[in-house]
Length: 266
Image 1 (spheres, rainbow, N blue to C red):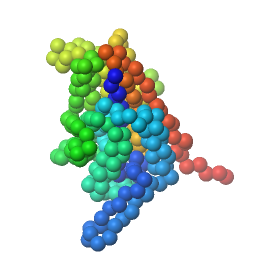
Image 2: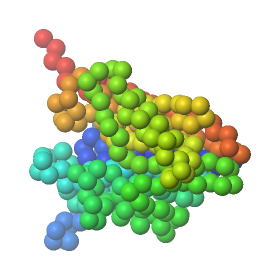
Image 3: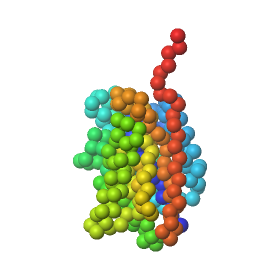
């Protein structure tokens, strides 16, 4: 039996994203250190992260997938305003420290949004490279995880279309991906599972023995999501699968943060 853990959208560096209990950062002069500690909301995220680790157990998972946006990047449109550090090296190392806590035998990372992780070179790729001394690590724009021993093939890619116009549409882009994968089996091969991210909410579509899933995120509601409106409330969590001889047992864990809206009592 193989265990697969699917995570995404950690956004290391964001004041709304996941960060370790303490991060030290050298100043430009190198003579002093900045010490970063999580805010109250980030402590809540870290508590959920530790709860996840307790739930999946102390045994190593076979594959931990971080499906894009492990880091938040420079946040160019906000001039870094929404970051606890603009130092990309510190963002990368913080993401590495968090993923090491999972204790996976193999890490698999895909390329996230260009706005956050860049393309030349991609921060997700740097995270994958720095995980190499601790376990096998793989990176690509998208990945096909092929476990011939257990008889499962999983396609992972970060991007999926996001719909906030109406409640019934979030499954549409995912269903389209699943149908196109089935139609193009001759070219791509057979995928039992499709894993997507980016949307910051959980969704699953199942057709026969095949299914596709959007992983929840590890970032709280941002000012950008406030602009979208009340339809955009991120879900925090992960997807976990156990695979044995072609059979897949899947489960999800989702935490909904308390209302992020500042309330003024009159």
